[in-house]
Each structure stands twice: as structure tokens, then as C-alpha cells.
Image (cartoon, rainbow, N blue to C red; front, side):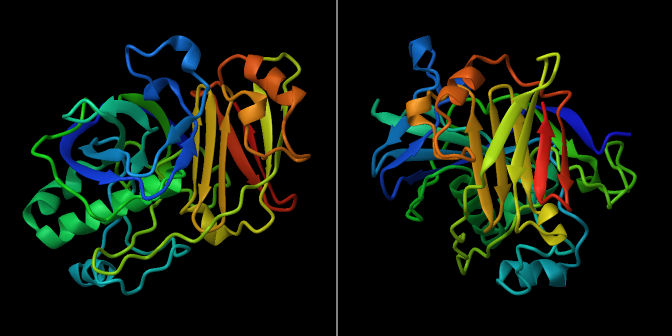
Length: 323
């Protein structure tokens, strides 16, 4: 049995939070961030996000997102109060969150805005809607996950528009580690020693609503790539010399048709976008900018999301992704 399972997310709207960018930022533009009226040749061009731009965060629900692990009410209350909070503790109580790409939209006045989906398991829906403190906690968790997934710094001066979502939450295919599902669940796999760390939905580090734990600055790891002999897949080698077993359960590796996103809380953040032109590609290659190699990579076919495999090679201090 594979250690990850390919699942389709069809998120159901929950509620919407309106924030804004605290400072100018640049983020990659993907297919899901294009308005229907936008020209197709804008794909791959980075989005320049001005300070003050409105950002709508959709809180949505989907049963294919793993639920939080079992935890006593005392344990949950300690986490909400900011006690026993440790990003590298894989045995603690946490709430998995899947974050979508940013996409363009407009606010009620017709001005440009951004939208992003944060998808959670509906098992916490009732408590979120019933308890104000728990809802505030979920909102802060979502804002921090968006910040760690993108280059944005979001304002905590927020609003809650009287809408279930800003636009329809995006459907997409993801690979979810089976170990995150509880025993007895059809998607569960009990082998906790697997070294495969494929795609998104790993445990999310949680910060309390009453005491915001700011995300530490992460480094961008160096990486290289080579096509397989039959040119049907790409082999990415990502150097992660400081990665430990404690980090794995809190890490996410998101493989999309034209993008690879690695997030290790407080340690590494890597965003490989196959559609970004060489002169706008971040300095992520082993020897500086990708240059001609980036042009070749850009021409390569879409990644094999369903057949993607990744492993952490401890002795070599690398993550090897084949997609």
C-alpha cells in the first residue's frame, strides 16, 4: 500500500475572512490565480501584490482533509491558550489545513483583490461555528498557514463578510499521507516509520488565538533536477541538511501539475514553479539562478501528480521527488 493517497478536494464553503497585505509582496501566478477574462499568456508571470490589497480567506470543509488526532479537552484547551505549543512535536494536538494558491478576484467595489482557500475537516465545523474563541483560533491558524504558504504578511485587522465564501472554493487533486488519517479510516496506513513525505495535508503547527506565535523566517533550500531516461518524469533533488525526523510529520510537499511546494515549519520553504520565466525565477538552483536550465524545465511536460513519489534519504540529507 502506498504511504500517500491521491484524493480530490471539492470544498464546501464555510465562512469568509477579509484581511489585507501589510506590505508589498511578489507571488507566482498559477492557473487558479487567473480571472476568466485574463489573457492566457499571463500564466507564469509573477503577481505583484501591493500593500493594502484586500485578501479574502475562505474557510472551507472537505472530508478528504485528515481530521485532528484524538485529544482530551484539557489538551485542546492548553493549545488554545498557547501552552504545550511546539512545531516539531508530532505527537501533539493539531489541525491539518490545506491551502490553495492565491487567485485574482475583485471586491464589492470592483477593485482588485486576492482569494485563497483554507480547507479543513468538517469534524471541527460545529465547534468552530458555536464557540467564538475556537473560531478566532481557526481564523488565526488559517492566516498563519496562508502566510507560510505564500510571501504575504496579513493584517490582523480583519472583517467577516456576510458570505459563505468569496467565489467558489477551488476543486483540486492532492496527495495526502495515509498516516494522518485515524486508525480504522479507509485512507489510514499505520506504518509510522515510512520515509515517504508526499504532498500536502501534513500536521499544521498551531498558534493560539490569544497569543499569536509568529512564524520564524525559513531558508530556501538548494535543489537540482534531471529528467528520467524516458523523459516521462522529472527527478528533483532537494538539499535539506538540517531536516530531522521530528520535522517530517509537520512538513508538507505539495505536487501540482506545474509546481512543487515544500514547507518545513521554521526551517525550509521552497516553491518551484515550472511556468516562471528564468529572469523571474527565485534563486533556488544549486548554482544561483536556473538560467538555461529553467528554460528547459519550463518546456517540460506537466508533472505526474498521481504517480509522484518522494523519499527523505537520511544519509544523503536530501529529499528526492520523482514526478
